[in-house]
Each structure stands twice: as C-alpha cells, then as structure tokens.
Amino acid sequence: MQIGVLTVLFKHLSFTEMLDKVSGMGIKAVELGTGAFAPNPHIDLERMLEKKADREAYQKELQDRGMIISALSCHANPLHPDPQVAKMADDIFCKTVQLAMLMEIPVVNTFSGLPAGCTGDRSPNWVTCPWPPHFLEILKYQWEDVAIPYWKQAAAYAEDHGVKIGIEIHPGMLIYNVETMLRMRDAAGPALGANLDPSHLMWNGVDPVAAVRALADAIHHVHAKDCYVDSLNIAVNGCNDHKPYDQIANRSWTFRTIGYGHDTKLWKDFVSALRLVGYDYVISIEHEDALMSIDEGLSKALSLLKEAVITELPGEMYWA
Picture 1 (cartoon, rainbow, N blue to C red):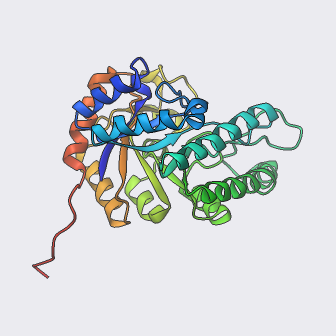
Picture 2 (picture 1 turned 180 degrees about the vertical axis):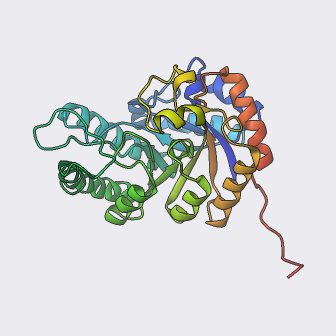
C-alpha cells in the first residue's frame, strides 16, 4: 500500500515543482485532476493526448523520483439535465479515459452525477427519502431512464480502454452511499467501482470499516480525508446540512485533516480492512481542512498515515 496525494492543493506549483515537494515528503503517488470540478494545474488533457513526447516526459519525471500517477480525476455531472453541461462532463471523462490508457494509469475518478427529477426539468434533484410518493417516481426516472444507461455505456468504454472507474461516493450525487454504489456496479459491470473517500460517509453515520467490508473488490481507489462530526449541532439539526463550509462553528460536520475527525485507531482499522478485502494500492490524501494551512494539513495527514499504512506483505503464520 502506498501513500499518495491529490495534487490540486499545490496548484500554484508547476508539475516538476510539485513532484519535488511531495517526493521530498516521502509521497510515492500523485492523483492529477484533468478538469471540471477537479482543477487541472498539473496536466493539460488536450496536449497530453496529442503529444507522445509530453507523455513520455511526464513519465520520466515520475520514474526519476520512483513515483506513479495513481489516478486521473475528472469529477463532473454527466447526468445533468442541461445537455451542454452533460456533454462537457462526458467529453472530459472520455478523454481522461483515453489518456489513462495511453499513460497506463489504471483508474479514472469521477462523480456519478445527478439527473433532474423528470424529463423537461432544468435542475438536478437529490432524493433522500421515499415519501411523498413523487420521490419514488423521481428515483425510478433517474436510475432507469438516465443513470444506468449512461454508466453501462461509460463502464464499457472504460473497460475497452483497460481502465477502471472510481466513483466518488458523495452527498448530492445519485451515488452517495454503499448501497447506491453497489446497485450501479451491479447494473454497469465490474469496471465501475468506488473511489472511497470515508469523509463523505462519516457525516451520515456510516462506519468506514463496515463500508470497506461491504464494498470489498468494488474499491478501485481510496482517498484519505477525515470528517469532524459536531455532536452538539447534530443534536439540534441532524446530519444533513446545507450551510456553507466556512460556517464551521454552526455546521453539523466539517471536512478535516485525518486524525482531527477520528483518531489513529480508526484509521488503522480502516487500513487493515482495506488489506482484508484485498485492496493494496494507493491511499491518496485530499486536503480540504479550512482550519489548517495546506502544508500543515498535508504534513499531519502524512504523519498519521505513515503510522497506519501497512507496506509489507504478511509473513508466515508460524504461530498457527
């Protein structure tokens, strides 16, 4: 298992400067955004698709430092009711898959997206309860008419290119918990799996270890980000919270650097569960902590992960 980082946090640095910085910290993998909600300061999607020499130069920079690109990320909404928005998301996804194939990067991370509530509606509609009855009608339309047809085609496209899809389970998207993730995987096939970010589950009361056990081989990539759940605010208003992220004192939950939402034991249990289900790839740090600087947040996350991550193969059970 290797420690990586989503490099958007160093958008002010060039690709080479960023690699020097993170490799100097002992990080062995980078996750690069290619556009949409995932900014692309470190890779030009169009140019890299066109120029083999540029791809080879990137690979040389990585090889010289003993590093890899763990995933390309193109988070967007390909299910959006605005055809232009949906097309932009699909175009970025398809081009990112093409580049991943050319550069032998095994995973493309993205969102499931979220459709409208019905034909002719103009805004995505996130349904989280079954009543009044029109919510079930919305869900039937979203899944059967829009999402499953799109993701079956997208998963086949990725598989044809030798690439796996990592859907980031996320509030406000059609795939927002383990159950919805597995439902879509059953429909679209094994090329579609999870980019598991436990912070997006913690705020809703999910045990990340239980989530890992349930997802098992559906986990294609992993993010390391924590979530502080404010029990006092939840006691008053519950877990769902649409207040802006900068209203930390008033929110029910807030993204934090790992170790500042849950203790080291939880992260050790999380890593052990990943090994138990056969995941032995990258855990990519995503810094979204409004209470810490980028450098301090990354440094503290890295320190905890170095203690928690299991890097060697298990030895013989001499005691059994």
